[in-house]
Image (cartoon, rainbow, N blue to C red; front, side):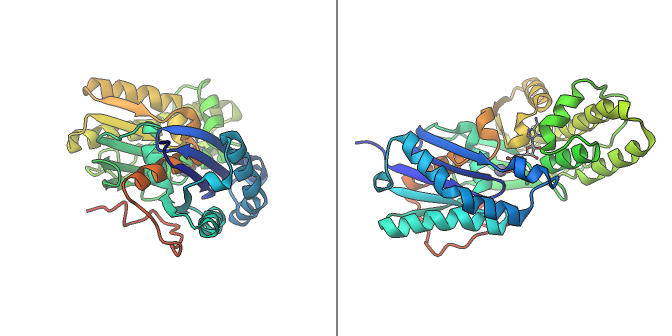
Length: 337
Ligand code: KG4
Ligand code: ZN
């Protein structure tokens, strides 16, 4: 007997996405319509523009996912939607569509936490998930989570101000590199000298697992006032090195303290080559392994949402059709004790 087909929708920020999975191990289709070009004109994501774009595109994205998966709505056994965290008006579009499908078909609905999607994405398509220390680094989140299995998460620490990706985006904007800033800043940093400017490593040795990146952004702003355009690559390289330094140091510390042997990195900043390189080196020096989400799974997508839903469904999970959206992290799933 074939595994149940899951249709997942993801509209938490600026990507309208749908995916179809057969159980947790067989991806049938993943479609992502990015709004990045629309938001670029504003230098960042504008919530109302995002929700209107989702409204304009969700039906087309779902139709394409079903077509690529070679099935129809009637073949779907479970409908899933991201209900948080994210922009409230954006979350409402995809989650309401998924609920509507479930209601019309008399099939179950599963509410999925977007951060859980990122967190498990390094193990996408695998039947089981091992114990690990998870670093989720995206435009909206920076957190360290101890994972003892699916649904067994203990929040170790998180950013107290900007997310790492948000810092990349803000500094890139400051330096006139445009939006989205992460990839452009990384590209510019390749030509720069990371040692030229001494930039702060906030909270690197704070003794806990929390982060702070807003001071670093302010430090770049002050330096920029005293430097010339030719110094931008050095500023980029120095900034990137400071972020990577703190992320790597705190992640390896967290793994050591939690006695985990595996580190898993996910989210858009997980695409950063310098982060990948330095995390591998630091983990190897401690006898730890590292798993990175595949590049196509690092930025927002519905495949990771479908994967969580399939895993949860197999474990007997189901959500209420009245499930509210939760724009914040979701304290029930990510508790910090
Ligand atoms: O996971 P994602 O799509 O967003 C959230 O769920 O929040 O990640 C997008 C973030 C953006 O902040 C973007 O600048 C950053 O990931 N990013 C990068 C790189 N590629 C994307 N940051 C650093 N280096 C990169 N190569
Ligand atoms: Zn995300």
